[in-house]
Length: 230
Ligand code: IPE
Ligand code: IPE
Ligand code: MG
Image (cartoon, rainbow, N blue to C red):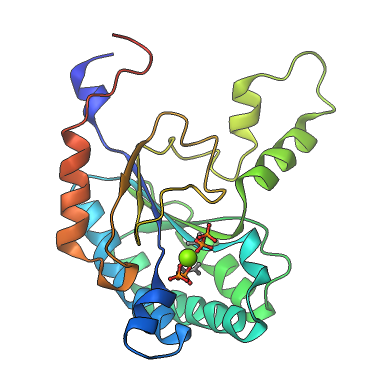
């Protein structure tokens, strides 16, 4: 593998964590943190694209997040719907393809409609991709992939699995950024992160912006990726 290929950062995944703690520090409700967190998204993803990243994945809602109070879950979905509505013009102007990873069947009709409309409207854009993990869990995704291919004759290969994940059309993740000091994956793209670099920062998501994104990507370029070699 040439040095160029080894170093190129194509796909960055963000585990946007710490909204609740950020709000708590200010004595505000957790939902205030989610709202401020959603406001940071355009700046972060556009910084990535400006630095040559092709795909940005955002962990918006995990399959485990249903265990939160209903009022908080409803608010997260409402913010996501507002974000997509507001950001749809930019997706089109900047030719960003939207992909949703996860099972959107249980979400509200209007959010589902907004997602489907934008996925369809942006599907031919090639240069940039925004992949939102929504009601997403990596184990559920892998099980779903295996179920989709189990009727196949012969052995199931790695390519079969990759081709049946939500991310079939995008490259594996090169860099995972998790905010808020937690050092875990929380069921985020386990398969696609097989050779990812991991960047953990204590910064809480609502405080994470352009400067912090640049720092994370700069850190990535300082890593030596060996892919099993020496
Ligand atoms: C991340 O922030 C946002 C979602 C999980 C949707 P949290 O809500 O997990 O914030 P903390 O971790 O409780 O601070
Ligand atoms: C991961 O954050 C999920 C999202 C960012 C959407 P959580 O806050 O839900 O993860 P845990 O509970 O700390 O592992
Ligand atoms: Mg959290």
